[in-house]
Length: 512
Image 1 (cartoon, rainbow, N blue to C red):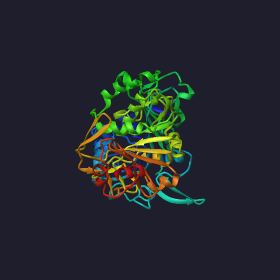
Image 2 (cartoon, rainbow, N blue to C red):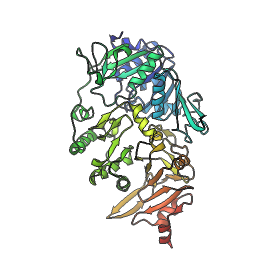
Image 3 (tube, rainbow, N blue to C red):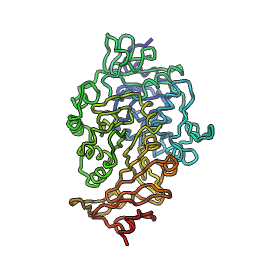
Image 4 (cartoon, rainbow, N blue to C red):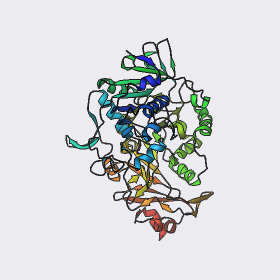
């Protein structure tokens, strides 16, 4: 039977050495006050300590002094297993300083491993991750020098097929954010942006004899409609009521509490951008890339658009009227509508459906997407892409590996180089005013997030769209298939590549 508690009382249920699963998605739907109660107790008593934290999508709030950052920084955590660290500003730095063990697994694979544990299974099989960094035959999931746990990902063969086997430690404690708890302890998510892995986490914890702690905005007498209840009260041990601060209507647009027709998506998106974007600078290179990439869309496509440069695809899809003819999806479970970005990435304006995150990754893993648009840090001559690990920095692979693993058409959107690149567009002509000092096309990527070999085996069509040209994945590596007006194929492209590429016959004839 659940009990209503204060945050300080609830965190007393967490013991030294516990494995805790969090349900937030990057910076949204995070039980911040519960995390800060853990930090307060740790500062006062030195406990709980030796914690292991598990999260599919990360549990920061884009602020190194909020949520879990404090108790992680001060030493309460021994190990973190996470799909993405982007919203965890302080934690990302500490990982690279070997302050604790840290492991990066594909977001969807963590989600499915949590669901497997909820069903009494030790782990989950997946083809996602084969031939990329997480594959133990390459690097494995450890991010820093002290992360040597080889139990999290194993290569296996079953019935003549290759798989990776993802196994998480048994979860002892769930920390969840919901909207309301009724008098039976049932938890509804009406004003939340996502449901995430909430149910799977709670089921796994109860199967392990653990403790479920839920922070809610309010306690209500009237029971929720059964279809609105994400977590039944029989799975809940502690409920903490924390009344939320008032939110602008722009944030309310993300909860699905009122209908937002297609004609209003842009208005709400602009309101959100003013409050959630870290910067809002017109990037000519990104505009060129987005305009070209958007031409790959077809009516009735099911689509995922990544953050950063790929976000410009939606702008040009809207201008051509294509946006109303496709179905956008986002990793957190949203289908339809218009995915938000910035600090509320994972939420959706005008969604048709928002279901559990594991179900979304079922769709992605089985090739249910027609096309996706992803960014990239670097591309090598073979067509491999690194999207998770920069020089002296990392964010994590997130859902990138799942999204690109089976999607029929994968479009990478990235500049030819960076740091100093300056581009102008005059009519249809592109003019490179200044080249960047950091190349994005390299002999070999430092770590593989997307495997060209695996893509060829799967029969996927892969494009690499830049501000000056388009490559496609050929049998041996990159093939140059398109050069924009105003660009010199030799001086602006071929001479700047550290490797030779195959050139489309029509382009090769033009060079003669």
